[in-house]
Image (cartoon, rainbow, N blue to C red; front, side):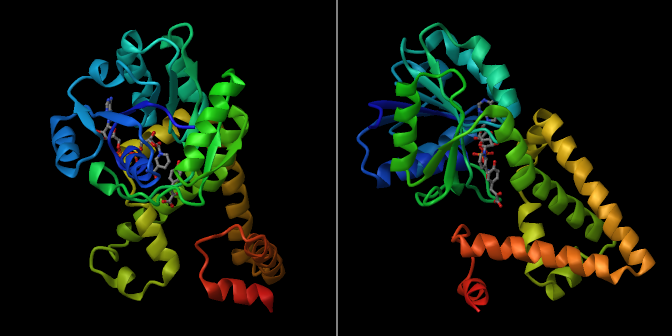
Length: 303
Ligand SMILES: NC(=O)C1=CN([C@@H]2O[C@H](COP(=O)(O)OP(=O)(O)OC[C@H]3O[C@@H](n4cnc5c(N)ncnc54)[C@H](O)[C@@H]3O)[C@@H](O)[C@H]2O)C=CC1
Ligand SMILES: O=C(O)C(=O)Cc1ccc(O)cc1
């Protein structure tokens, strides 16, 4: 079941992809959009993004049955405060932020009685941002994590059905677990990519093309990930502090153990470690959980 009127607040990669996916799904919702900068609103109008691009938050949310907060995590609270007085009674508010506890803490206090808040997080994205970065298939076969946290069953199930219509699979998760899982599968991997590209740049080998020219897929993937939006990722680390520090602590412990093994020539430790991690990759492929894996990956598993 869809929503008759949807408001998208923040018209970047995630919101624009939602609009194109809604269009592709043939939803007959009327979609309003709002972005803070005039330039983004102009681009959105030029692209035909949303049925109506509004110049104020108040106008965008006024009649909306579903309001989607799609701005960097650090801007969610301020946006929620600005929109709250203009919400339609009984509407549902959701968000797409990469961190959940901080968003819940920042948004919920502003919401009037009778408005449902159902936080969500599509596990899909690219390194591109802005209104022209979106595309209809972004959510196809990707997970959208739903963190009901006090929302009614009816509002939660309705949002799940909406995301499924956009192409995603949905799974419910508790907030603390969500933030820890995302620190492991997304946040710390991004930090590692940022660090590795920074290290290569310190060696002055990135800008003169040498690293790019000779790099295999590993480093290229790091450069892609490290090109992600700086505002968004700054906010992720500032707001998911406990989980990212926990995982970073474990990561550096392991890294030091590997460093020591290299220094002392402990080949057995390195071999055992790499064997264990290879099994994890094979397990993912065998379970068919990596839809991006090229066929040769699956073939290797079948052997
Ligand atoms: N990019 C990705 O791969 C993914 C991002 N997310 C989350 O989705 C949210 C949006 O991310 P993207 O669409 O990628 O970002 P984006 O940078 O493409 O778009 C964000 C939009 O919000 C606007 N904005 C920023 N501050 C604002 C404010 N105070 N008031 C109104 N508008 C404001 C920006 O001008 C921009 O139009 C973030 O919370 C991010 O953590 C979730 C999954 C994947
Ligand atoms: O582009 C990539 O590799 C991603 O990991 C996309 C992504 C970025 C942030 C999220 O909160 C969820 C997914």
